Image (cartoon, rainbow, N blue to C red; front, top):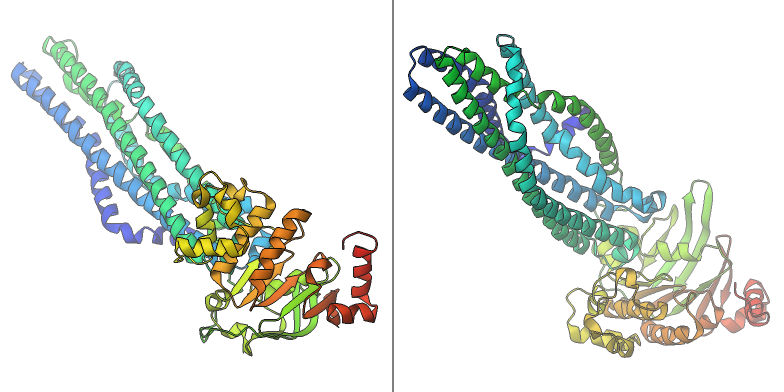
Length: 577
């Protein structure tokens, strides 16, 4: 019940439209329940006097009343759907913003499909609980009770006369069928676009966060979300026209029956009031029982979705700025770890008392067996996670004391698994700095050894690269990622095994680009192949979350410790770590 009350709060911004919808509902329901009584009283009096002119006037009046009812129904349907769709957009937007703000730890606990389901299936299910079911319950309940109570006074055999509306309704459905099908196709395409964008941005969350592009992704999502809204409203308009059209056609048939029944009444065959009133109430009674039977189950299903949605919205953001956080000024690039301890799981340290210092512009390589904690160090520097104890400082400033955006803007990351987006080559490079000009993009591509192969693509820099860069080779994707990092121009650079998944030829091209990228920057190189870090000014050897050795390549070989053993395994036995 509490979550249902929370859901109702989302309607508050749209109360004026809700008020208009209620007015339409009241008038539409009143037309259903009030018209039969008028018809019964007047027709009984008129036909008692055999006044054919008045009979014709009443027949025309019925058509007019039902036409007006159709207008009210259209207003009710459109306004209610508008409110529901806007509320869905608001909740979906709120969820997406929440997902953009959550840390990597949250994504490691949830599958991508589950996260996407929150925003698609669960949010869509809330529409019924918020507006549709409530209004449907009131409207249909009123019609059902009023119609049933009145029909106790009328003849049950007249029900068979309503069958005349069946062919009219069937014809109306045939006319609108093709239009509704086309509209439904557009809606499915818009939903597919949203799903594609979601999968892409969530899978690329590391890239999004490292380039501080949360707000940019939110804007992209807003555009797709609005296109989906427009498609939904077009479908709603068609449905809102179809329903009153069907009822108007049925009303014409009823009018004919009223006229014919009135003629029979004039001849003394049946009672006119009973005939017309019963038929009108029969029309009103067509759907309420069926619709009300679905309402309770729909609300219960929607509330299960609401629980899931609010579970996400109530999730605490474990990585966030302090209220006193300052903007990190332009840094020189000194990075210091002071007795850092970090745990992914409680009582299972991934790093144990790590202390190291990288001087500005220095290349620091981090090596060690699998699971030693190399990537953990890379994740802690941009605050994808916070340390459990100790401190990480940049230029002697604790990174927990600065705003994350200002920190991450000055850190560049080139991961092992490159994530590109399904735009053009130029757009992917420009992701590093959104305001960059095409000339700056080209210069970054040249520095990243990517310019030549880009020119060979079908449309050069405007070539669409497909989802996750599927149209490019691994080496090409990696060089675009390097160009993106170059364009960002970070002071601190993290290379997380950036060449380990490449073949020898691609590795040479990528390594050449990396060498250019590291010039003048403090660089942390997570090394898989030791041949790539022989010139490192400082090599940190990790094992089981602890620093075992520190030195240059020559110094560590001389020590004949863990590094020397790893080196011999790679170069003497021709095997990799």
